[in-house]
Image (cartoon, rainbow, N blue to C red; front, side, top):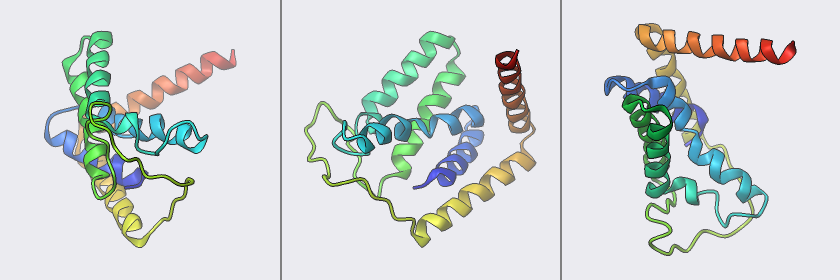
Length: 158
């Protein structure tokens, strides 16, 4: 899937589970943020490597809990990352790496934005708009997030 599909579907489903949609939404991007840059630089053998494993989801979720001591945040992070893996399912996912050896797809980085991906992105974007319009807590999370970003940027400019 592509970015908007990951964001919208994950946030929408997280809200139904009474998790933090914003936290799950951000965490849904972590597998690609971990795996894609090193792959493009030729360091990782695939764009779906360690960040696309259940071990990484577990370790990152556990680390989040140890740092924050907030179960809802840790569960939201784990859910967001797990949803990313599930949403990528039509393609290769090394679920149990490094415990099982995988033949990672080889070849240069290439990406084709298909009609299917475009439709999934439209669905994801629609779900985000729907969630924003109908979920007061999500709107508060978004407002708080951007307020904190603004504070950080203001403090850097001083």
